[in-house]
Length: 265
Image (cartoon, rainbow, N blue to C red):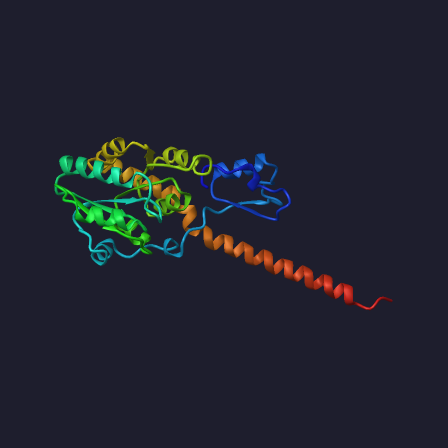
């Protein structure tokens, strides 16, 4: 995770320990791993993310057309994980009501319901006033949806947080797994690109406020992009280091085998 980790994740016997952030690097050091420049075990490269996030996305207007979304409305992406669970429905209803009143005709909500077909069908059948609500099922185009969006509402999963940051998305966190994901909340808040609330009404008020304040939305987007920069290149950097380590281990093993097989005088 981005803001915390359990101490049992760190073993002083490892050759390398890859960490995603300053907070986790500092924790690794307190657990006895070497963090200095010489002989360091800890390597900070960001969080590994899916290949779609390694490079810049296609042009926003083109993607909106492909995803059958409006190109002239502010877009809020709402996700609840692959299973579409949690308070997703309550968040959608509260935000649709608030945005419909405060920003009539200016906002669309894209709700990724994952495998929750019941919720998707329920949202598709419902009538909404002053706001478009587009319900989607499980998708492999999350990078494209994030590129089209102006902000995101999500649980505090490290992968989604890192990917949202890469795409420069102001982030409203709606829940987190105690212990495991708790540290991701201060990572987002203290980095300046989001807030946290488990209350659907508070979420709706906060996000609608962002949509009405272009200056704030832009500043948060810039903060998100700064926080996301290490993660966009981290996967390749980690893979490169692992390949070098494997090659070095193979060479060392080969040299040892040659030395063992050499005739003794």
